[in-house]
Image 1: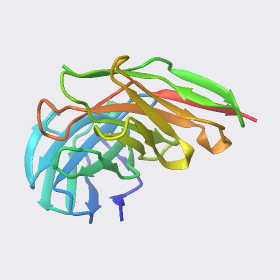
Image 2: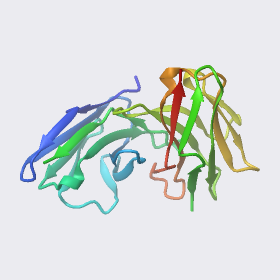
Image 3: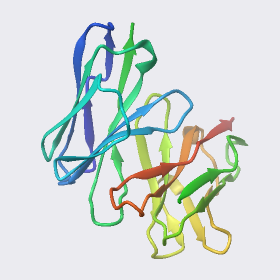
Length: 113
Length: 115
């Protein structure tokens, strides 16, 4: 099973709302990633968790708050977002054995109004 | 520093004709290279990967890529395009300097398949 699941598929939120994106994998991967992707662009890395600890934060604004409750789950908490944060948010996971291929979820299409 | 350059932002082929998507890389290490495909409003799907085994790598859906160290290239090919191949394709190298699993993406190539 090489599936990464993400919920919800679509999310519309106002600038004062608080919402969360969820990601789950059952491949035993010990690294999980959040990416932001704008139209016609490659994904941009936001956060990396290795062994459930935050290992990379690519200078992401604090209105995005990641959480890794266990080795299978990854959340992204959203608060006070801006319209320019509207994008496809992708979750991925990988082993940490030197090959590093990442398996991506289908993404959450976020619209901030 | 590692980097990836996809030489064409847009490629258009007719159904049934060969596909060639070009990618050059730069790496101080023995690289791990990947091709991913993304259909509209979908996540990325791994097509194939090179990790220092055979230089000709076969992937899913009839795609293959050849690692050429002398040319620092990892071009993606398919003998006969299908309408369902129309998508965005990303050439990717792993950032092995940091041992974090971080990936470095090319800018993408849009493949159009005409009937």
